[in-house]
Amino acid sequence: MNVIIVKNDTQIGQKTGDLILNKVKANKSAVLGLATGSSPISTYKYIIEKTKAENIDWSNIKTFNLDEYKGLEPTHEHSYRFFMNDNLFNHINIDKNNTYVPSGAIKSNQEAGEYDKEIEKAGGIDLQLLGIGTNGHIGFNEPGTSFDSITSIVNLTDETIEMNSRFFANKSDVPTQAISMGLKSIMNAKEIVLIAMGKNKAEAIYHLVEGEVGTQWPCSILQNHSNVTIVVDEQAASLLKK
Image (cartoon, rainbow, N blue to C red; front, side, top):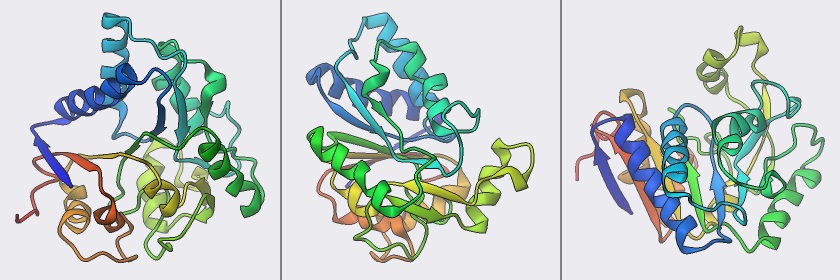
């Protein structure tokens, strides 16, 4: 596990953006796993700027997003499909038919599991971008999630609903379920890059990097992956001892 500590969110965006863009430039048909939320916004901004400046070609790139809120239409302003279009896809020359986000209309785990088959059909994810929750969740895989989990319908914890309520007008508007790639789905990626910033992520980063591997901190599963890079600011890294 490679841990990179930088000063601020802007530097996280630059470092992470370059890791992703290097993959795109090296492989014109790369398959990327992408994340939403506040953490990757600086990364996507940097990617857009550098793609335009260097005329980087995304036309044959495929992407698979980690998750989507259950019940939200793709056009809903708080859906993750809307987020990805608004923060990345609308600004680069990617074919939106090659951008996959789980459907918020999925009604069963059998239906959700088809997402993993689509990833497999595409050749697997070359690089997976992750954020992390304060309770150590990656994707929407909350504490207690089986390490063997694949894409499925998941219940969100009160803590996660509270954290995500800042994006909605009212806490009661936050969906209580999501469709999320499972931990096994994430671990199937050939390379993983996780980003985190702020003091409130420090405990999760500690358990990810130096804690015991176990389902209480889902992020700790990444210790079992052979190619993981963690990009964090000094506050998020503040509890690391090694």
